Length: 239
Image: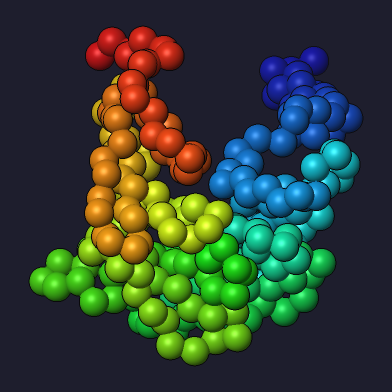
């Protein structure tokens, strides 16, 4: 058998083996599930530029969005019936809301700059989002709210905020002023987590919570009393 014939046979066998063998994607668990949000009965997350929902008890995930464009930042309403999210449709990034059961997304923001979904007000009537629409001369982020029925957005009384979460009674707001400076995590060694601040919306007093920098997770969990100490649970990786 000539060398060319042997090469052809080997190539054909390789193709048949690849077809017959299960793909790595199907044999392994689904990876890169991002931005989870939890309600009383369900979990929503972003995967492959779409939003998915799965029962908290487990089961098969249901694809919630099928529209052209990228969806991200899902947030359940307090009653768990609606989900607010960020979507890049028709070339613009805006905030949308839709039923968790499925349906047509309703656009809530119309500014030409990017608007990013950040959550809900405790009563479930308004969606919180971040926008740099009035920042000058630099477009820095602030938190705004907009009714689920639509209408003009209203700014929260926080001069600068990228993300945040209200207390259950709506009297206080935990927030971060700045976004992570770099979302590329390859060779990340820490140092990019921003401190969390707590503002009292009745008198606008701001408290900066204890901050270990690299040891503080980029998330919000508003508690009744602030921790008095900040103790790292893991050592900082060496550079």
